[in-house]
Image (cartoon, rainbow, N blue to C red):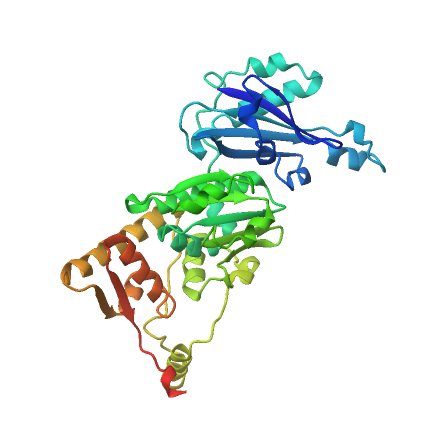
Length: 382
């Protein structure tokens, strides 16, 4: 187990100030544990990987406190440090989080007089919590309906890069872990690269099925690196591919509403009402001939779910899709592509007009055959 302290020095930049291991093995790590933008918070936590081993770093600084107490900051008094540990055993995000409180307590004790014996004596085997700080429900609630678009991307094993634009690094690492848990449903495989920088991102180009977070905005322009980008800033969270922003559909909002029972107006920016002529025509005909007493067959209404569990809901939904698609594939063993009625999307509580491609891609990934739902297309009338 290697422990270390990195400092942001106003004159020297990010520097290694102490370690119990070989300093050469930590070259470049200072940019991971002190990523750009971390100075905007008093405290933060960074999960990372180096040379195949996982690590955890806790960050603390005093510049914001100095700014509040003084009209002019004395740079000689600014302190920004990350205390990190590289563990010998393999662990995921939740297991790493067991050590966060103990490491932060050690950093606080060291902060007073810079006594490195405090850090040398910190023992991961003894100083750990028995409960993880990871809360699947809480993260889903903070993401809004967009979590359902992220669920689709994760099931498709897409390469997802989360761009941190001034928000908590810990929150971005939590999202990486959430995507990993979703992507591994139904025996999927997914690699959580955790926090990366421009210095160690290239190896991901040769990998499939991963997620990571970064504060290095230049990586956003490296479109060969990722399939989807999550941009997280103080205004909210956004999902993009290489050409456009991806927003939620009406079904996503309906499902999320049933799981939260709360006002979703703060997530209105995630909704996109795209023009689909077939839907407009059918909606109009139902309104004219039924006086809006009846909704079209694809309209989804859900009763509120008491004590919702997002992980259980997404697990059940994914398993139901797997069984339904397997049933169709097994029914037509000699067909390379299988066309079916789009009502399967209603059965799976997906969007009748938007999710045909998703189901086709997902079935192809799971079973090597595309199941393609066909809906009524009236656009040829125009």
